Length: 179
Image (cartoon, rainbow, N blue to C red; front, side, top):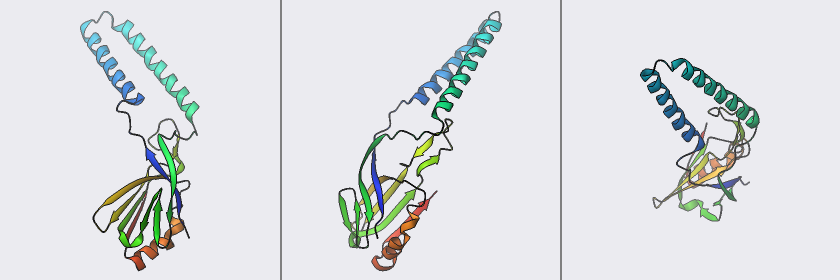
């Protein structure tokens, strides 16, 4: 019995994303409008109309963007390579093969699966399933961390007999955190 998943190597995140740039621009714009309101009260009615028009334009742009992205899966920022295979005596993660006798603990954080609705996304997009990780701790106190893509929600739970064998026969501490 084997457990197959795709190994994922994420790219480093850019420091400035589009959302951060828009947020900084918005706060700067609101600060400038506030300063202009306090300095020149004669122009406040004209500035208020311009400000209302810009807010309305931003709301319309956001709604159009949300409609275009609704139900689409996020783009994958990184590369997929290899698979993760849990067998009764060895664990294969991408090109690395680990014998169960050299592993002390196995921590699996299953946060995400492909097609999961993103609660924090205002665009109604679906997840690409890449927010999962496996941490392998060895008996010599080394540690390896891998990210993986999970295609469906119950992929981890289907292979619990292998994890029970790791706990009972090999003495490996296995923890599966499923959010």
